[in-house]
Length: 154
Image (cartoon, rainbow, N blue to C red):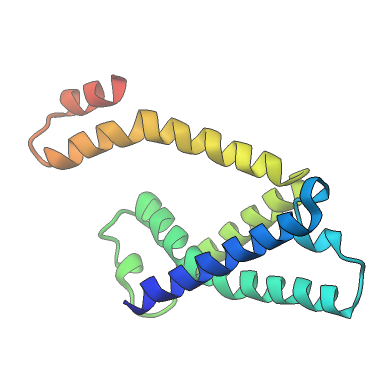
């Protein structure tokens, strides 16, 4: 219940900021709303707060990514994944993921490219990977290797 209320409030605030920003500048609205304001202490403070929110929110997303990659590469039943303490594998995967994401982010010319890549990737996964994966999950253990290959081939 607390999460739902929190997300609803965040969504409401984002929508209000978007609507008010567009209403204020109309056709001259920049992609980054803060670019519409002159450089001042307030603008710098807002940029810093956005940076803090990204840095604080990154570990919550990173945990799921690291765990998924470790499961794929080391196997879902690996003792490294179920370990209650940080191992050298956790540190190595964390450094690799942060390095790869940082390098990718520095190479992007703009957010349009990131959204285009995300949309293209998500569409491909949605059309080509998820349907056979759901079929295999529904029939777990009842399919032979040939049937699994056929499910992905279609």
